Image 1 (cartoon, rainbow, N blue to C red):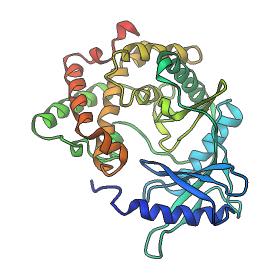
Image 2: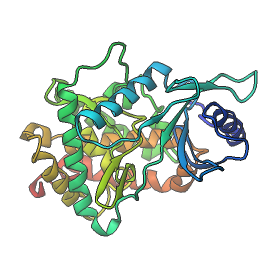
Image 3: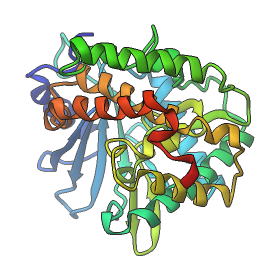
Image 4: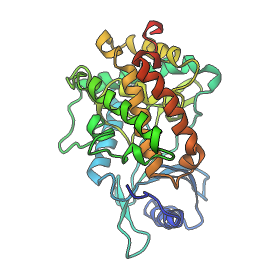
Length: 340
């Protein structure tokens, strides 16, 4: 898979951000600062007149259609209004649109842009990691309960996260074999993991009680805590998957944490207070955690020019191999069910 971003991307994004701000009535001396570049680009926009702040998201080209984005916004709005889950409200453009299309120059394809309200708060501290994972589980359960009963609006479209779209022939983020340092023995080891995942997850049903609309990036980094209030942000990956995919995503980058099994236990404690799970679900937690690990390996390979990929480098591949060896010895060694 070719690289998603090239060395000129940030320059193009700055032009788009400047043009987009005009669509929202910001004056020319407003400031916009790039605060994150991953799948999309996120800018903090400051109004020069009153100092108020907003969040501008510029979508990656040729990834999410305007209808995909509109569907994401529809669920965020429903969660806020119907499920008591605080999500950022959309700031409408001058013409009343939720989504605008902006080009960096006449030769470039238009990019979708959305402006969100700025929500105060900070990511939960690592000092309270166990308590934070219990909170993550409780919020996920609330969202899943809503998803089970919510009547999606017409033309609702979101991507699916299953075997085929993560490590199969329709992988959204590319092939895990293109991850940094995946050669020779490493490729053989992870290939054996992929085979095992296919065999084990083929028996994990896609029925309504196990598979539905999920956040799909439900990490602590996407929670904001402010004076006891909690907000959930970054629904860009939301789509259809196993409900426990949100548990797997919570462990992203920390699957090797010494307290990983205890973190899972606390997530489940918060979750099952609102939405019970059966043993069949719990037997596949390790599979989903390992599947997420391979998916992110593919993402880092196809997004190697991003700050996150540069920071992770080959260390992510090395840790993935350590986890893979544990998983192949016994899937339940990765996340101990005895502690769950």
